[in-house]
Length: 623
Image (cartoon, rainbow, N blue to C red; front, side):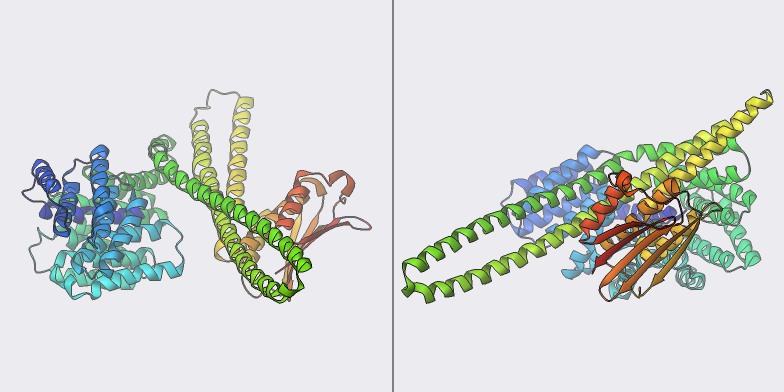
């Protein structure tokens, strides 16, 4: 459902671009560009060429990637020589638009944000508003689809407020209304502020209510939809449903309009998901199917995939496995087709790691050269002092100066090493997220699909023994699903990033406590968040030790404590099991991993066997 917000952008963009490029053809624009290419280079010529290239972007047939690449190449050649200060901003504007046309939304988000900020810095408010009007719906989608920190949300909200505060925006009702509708979406889906969404949508309705309803059909009824959905979420079911039925009736009467189909598709997505969450599956099914029937003309894969997910979950809840599996296969097909973009993102992550490693090697080489030169200088100084005491004072001064320079260099190297360490940690975090996402979204989807296939089998002709075997097999698939889900969660738990080590450990122990082993968690002296890298390492150490208890200890009780005294952090994991044989397990993979992680923290680990039974492992790290 959240991706449907982008259709506000899609609808408005088509309307805006058709006005911008009226009476222009691909051939005439190409001819104009080639004529300008033959002229002498100047800021005037360059600016005209760039604006023609931007218009060419809108004339290229959708999906013609080769034509888009040619345009980017021509644009990049101009960027290498032009002195026009706005050239880079227009390039980012064009590049973001190209990515938008090919549904590469993350790349479009990045380029459009850079273009918007550049136009604002240049005080080119006309183009700033054009880019802003594309960027903020993308921005809303990004905040809904991803866990964005509150600081980031405030920053994005400021973009919307900046645009609305500009006098220029009031001159264009369409731009103003589109920004206001996007802001209403921000209130209802990000902030869950239904009253503010209702009020904001009402401002749009009030402005365009007396205008020609046919010209402003989608703006008017999308705003009405925002109000009805706000009423439903506020518990005003009858009032919200009455308004919704009125919108559906008007749109059904005007089904010849694409704008009416667009509004009906939005109702299917927004309100269909609402009823699914309320477990009103009949309403969810009826509205989602209506959305599917009216969304075909949009050719918008992200939106269709959101509807397919809703229909899959609805049919599954209604115990109609065959239909549910049909939509699950559509979701899987969409994810397979999107794999190329995932690979592109992974390549970008790899490139970051490659550059970090390259920089690290360069710093190490520089460090070795500096140490070698320092040794040579020290030897020369000693020989010179023996040869002539008269130069002693001068040499002492030189040594002092040289040591100071070396100290400065060492401080620079340390800063670089810290920077590299942070980059490597960031890269590892990205990789953990990717692996966790693949396990949860890809592997678990296949497991669920396999389970549904077996559950859909007609077992009426099976013997009682075969039915039991099939039932046991389905239970095994359930266990595999839960194991993979637990592994993907523990690779990079959301609580560790958002709430810190204490909350993450507490949730981990709550999840694994059972009637065989009771886990207890104690904490003392932890008053604030630790460094992210330290929290990740301590969490993984605790996870390794807890796994050892679960697999080998044969314990009934286990304790995990995390304490801080001044500048020292202590993590202790103990149990009442059979006790560890330190000589036999010293070379085990688990303990080697623990020792390796503690060494990375410059910490100390002590493993002791209790006098009667059980094992105690204490890790101490100095902050």
